[in-house]
Length: 243
Image 1 (cartoon, rainbow, N blue to C red):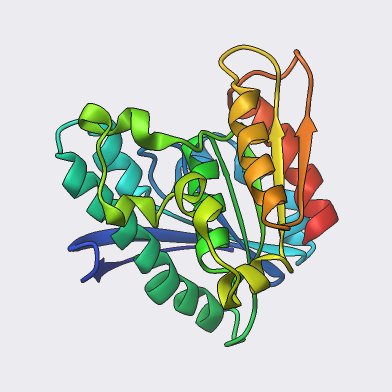
Image 2 (cartoon, rainbow, N blue to C red):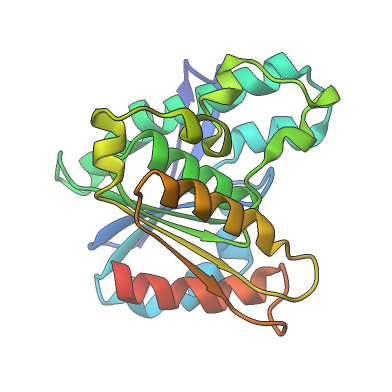
């Protein structure tokens, strides 16, 4: 049921680990938090709580190293390099990982659900907004969507601008990308307990709404903190509804 692999990405100029759990079903790409690796979701028991959906053949779960997040949280790189890495990571997802997922599913046209928590939610939203031709939905839990605070001096380049939905979406003109995005669905879920910042999700939802993009905001209340128990409760519920 579990398959771990890795390959050298010319876009990222390094090897990337990719893990798959399951044998059949809707492909779900779950992004790790911050600088997490491809097996983080298993260590934090997310695969366990998704076990029934995986065993039933409803979903097939994929995860890869958070390469761009790792560079960002280390705080050792220039804003230019961090911006470049975000752009390259998203290019890796679209041009390398999604084709690999489709090959693994034996379906060259199958669409993928993106999901993630915290900075993983940023990545899920970013690929869904940037590549709505392949991502049908995004489940964004406890999202952190404005990453400029993590860039040295708060400066960024064009690479980062086009990688960050909170920046590029307000200025996105009508066209094929926006037209397709309006056929998709974005869910923002967050607790109202410790370390949560609901305003991040509300701000992003307003931007999407202004562009006519379907989205839903689900507050989960003060008993849900910014941590794995919250996300382990959320994700099985949404995937059982949306996959």
